[in-house]
Amino acid sequence: MAQPVQGAQVVGRIALLLRLVGRNPFGTPLAEIVRDSGLTRPTVHRLLTSLAAEGLLDHDTVRHTWHYGPEIFVMGTVAAARYPIEELARPSLVRLAEETGESAFLSIRRGAETVCLLREEGSFPIRSFVLHEGVRFPLGIASAGLAILAYLPAAEVDALLDDTETFAARWGGQHSPASIRANLERTRETGYAVNPGLILEGSWGMGAAIFDRSGRPGWALSLTGIEPRFKPERQRILGQLLLDEASRITQTLQRPPIA
Image (cartoon, rainbow, N blue to C red; front, side, top):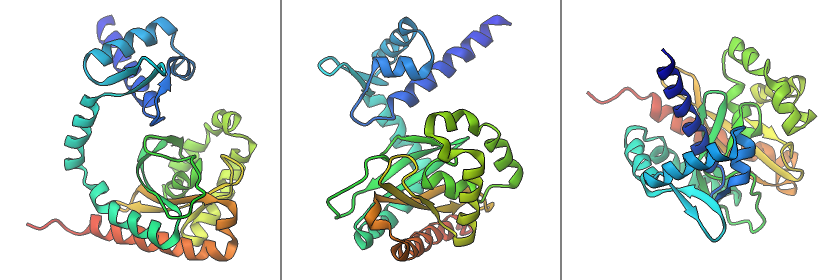
């Protein structure tokens, strides 16, 4: 009975390390992976080396950072054919970036987190770099997670917010359960979420949820930029653009399949 448990534990550790490596497109140093994984340095190094031998990771020996390897690209390409959300969302991201000048993103819900999948840069020269492909945030942190969390059933919201004290310690008191619930209420009133520089001062974001065929929020579109670009009067314009594009994708996803 012990062997299956050990095997499952190894799989869990490998999945965790792959997620940690994928957080930074410029590579992740070993020390950071060790710190955030909670595993010992020898264990992390052994697993990373094994993954590199299989082509799942690459090691930059000059910068001493770890990156996704070519096999990850192959797997992602195969998975994309099964889940075409990126193909559906790309035109919306392009339109949002062109119309607003801000950077536009698509994020997906994965359990209690959101993961950024796609990015389209806007024309405005000053940008926020809080969000990029592969970045994960807990639901309730950042505009995409707020937009999704706002439309989950109340029981799910309560269960998720029961654990917020742990990441409030990491992300700051502005992400206390009470603060998140207040932001969720505002999101439900307007239809779109606003992150007023809660992760990084001066870096703002707005998001709108995309719904699957069952009516559950599974993805979100978002815009990020610097605070002066998100004045109240412009928020309404940006919010409506996000809602229009999110609705466009939702309608396509909910369309009955052609027989």
